[in-house]
Image 1 (spheres, helix red, strand yellow):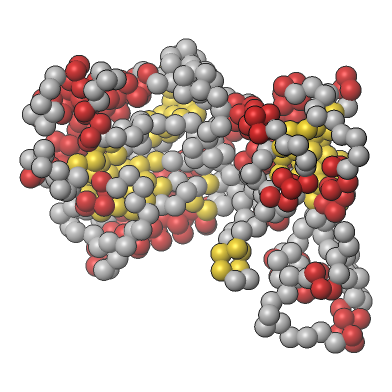
Image 2 (cartoon, rainbow, N blue to C red; image 1 turned 180 degrees about the vertical axis):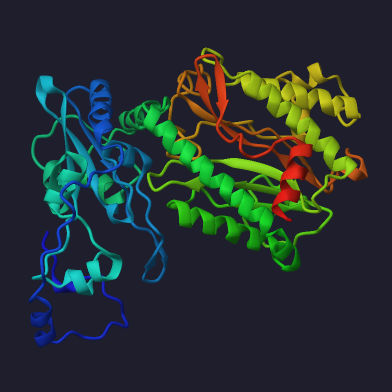
Length: 482
């Protein structure tokens, strides 16, 4: 399809363009190529990733879209982030990847040939580069041309306009990462949802074990996140004075995330007081009370799209009260038990079970749980979950809940392997209106979350630079607030 004047994504308030201006805009532009030696991050790892995916689906065409822009309001789009599977297979992570599609074409005994279909840099003899608000270079920035994209990735590149031709005439068996790009979904007839889900599952499973480069990227995300937590503590005096102190905290962390990486890995949770009992509190519109706790769940996403995911629960006064300390110590003991259960060959669910045993026993010791812990832990009972509810961790990588499409036998019901990266994050969420609790415990929400990589003999705490014990937290906060 050819871009016509009527097809340009121009705003309703744009000024008309005269023929004279249009002709003038097409003249006297100096060459401005990208550096010839520029390569996508992880460029040398792409062939191995393609080969592993190819081996899973011999003789089949595999279609992996980056995704499309989504409108936020009127003529403004949300900031674009490509699908993680696309980023993993191409090394391309920027906002200029909207609508692009990677196709692995079956190539006989050789496996597959990866072909990247993209919208190349708009030529200066047309109107797109200066009139198209959505894709034009003057509006949203430079895109590589076909040759530059080939050099960046080592892949054969084709114009995005030629993608539809693949879906005409005789075709090989085809699987699509469905639900990512409605236009790609619409091109195919006779879609097989089960086969497409298998492709999504394999793309997740191939990413379960991280290589050394990926672990380094995740460590970088963690290190930047640590800086963000330090920024937050330094900003507490100002946040405590603001009527929406949670928003102040959110903004402080998000500034660090944008300054150091692509942004936040997910919407920051800055939950003070009883808001911390809401597991995914992202309204962040509350004030901070000096005698309350702050649950901060936040992570930086690197420019390569690898994510950290860390939670700390901090006393806004700088010192835990006895009731806060009682609840915090139980969550810390649960997390420590979960971390101790991590090792190659352990079941993925083992660390959650270890953490929940500590939680249930602690609740029983307090008299909150009025049945024995063993009875509460029985799958047919589970009463302890009233106070903790959710799982205690997840895989971590390009998505902060990584590899979520993997089949249960490879992930949730599978075993841990060296190189897997995951979180351990038990919590207690003691609702403010829960009459089964003593008054001093109501309204306390506590979660402690750390990022770990499985090693040959256990796990390495990647987020060890942030203190976990109450004494260390109080000392750390005091040092930062001097």
